[in-house]
Length: 589
Image (cartoon, rainbow, N blue to C red; front, side):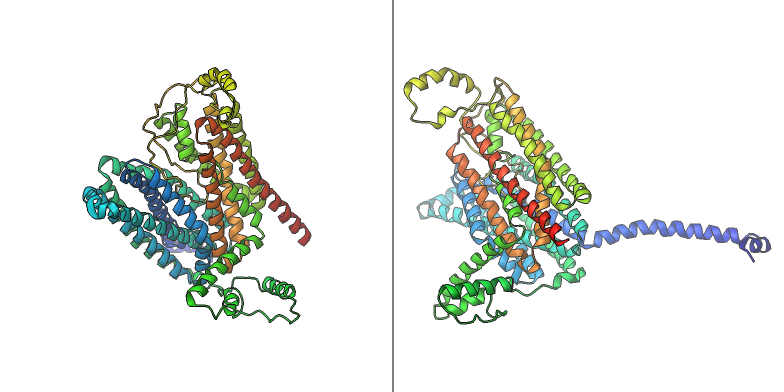
């Protein structure tokens, strides 16, 4: 009997039955949406996003504030800031491989918790020291004939450097390892999480320095230190809880391969070559977990004191880490990314300082920084879409071409009207007659330039994420801003190229990041990314050496050309990697 026949007999029971179904369906749909949102909010991805946002926000505030604090402490002199920058870069360069090896050898939860604790506690103690120094500076300067002040400066720089090393370890652990496991090695989900984390980084790069800067401006440096101190304590608790929950709800995070992180076939080949070189015809022993990697070196030097053995182990670990990096199939892609750090074409203290000498106001620079952040976000969106349409390797090729194409505008700005470039300043032995002949033209071209001197509110080496073009602004005390140059064409072309290039830049950065995540074996993921961080800082140091060698605004055009050369070299390395990867894929198929 049909339902309608039943309905005729039962006086409309079916109608009531249908209305109940509709009501239940609506109720289920109404509860499904909040339920799914609640599941997402409790899921590992959202917890990682929130934890990463808190960590990035704290890092950006701290790196902005510590540079200001160091300048204020040393009488508006850049010495402490320069020392801090060199210590930070040198420490990551030296200990990057050791940090990565430590990440590989220990359980994921212990690595994350230890790094988080050391980072936040170091910043907290450093903030307390700074508050005491700012509050009792005159008294401290009178103790020990002023040597207590030196001790305080040393403690601040050391603690800040320790915090940076811990932040590097936390970044390697979470953004290079945890994310891969959380996504279940799904390339599409991995690309989405990488892009989202980079968008969060872009937003915090702009907003975090503005927030702490307002606190320091409206209140005082002591209040600013207290604000950062409170933020780090709250962030420590929240991040610790969120990361612990992620570790519990993702069982794969607790499963980690053994710490033997070197290919056994490679070790056996190296051992055979060593024995042949020594003229030893004995058959090499089979490589096992007990005699490979660092243990192989320790057995050869058991007769040395413990301190020497530890030092030898540290050296061999660094060496093995760099060799592991060199052996990776994505070595050229990683090197290409590192070469992009040797540049002045970004919103760092150098480029913004040059813009001030060309009559660009601080308000306009702030606006340009906001636009650059938007183009950076566009690059993350473009990455996800290009990867779906053309694949990861081709996305890198497209991004490289777009990046280089936009930077051609920067090269054109060197020779455009309004450019202050004067090559005669690089030739001190030029004859006096030539100097006199060129004096008039040089004076005309330099009438809108000013010496790059004065106080700065940014460190010599500001914080670097994956690519370091951030909102680090330099403010000069003795630079008359707003003076109209002969022509704005040069500076317009320069910033047009820098801003538009960020689309290809961030897309390329995400491409190489995911290539490193996908192609590095899990047991070597930490040490290889540690070496990658070291390479990034090494190439970053080169770009500051360039500026030290040619510090005048008239030299900036030369720095632009050298920067484009390094960037082109980096992208060429990626093109070579892409060619090898495609050839290998065709051969395998």
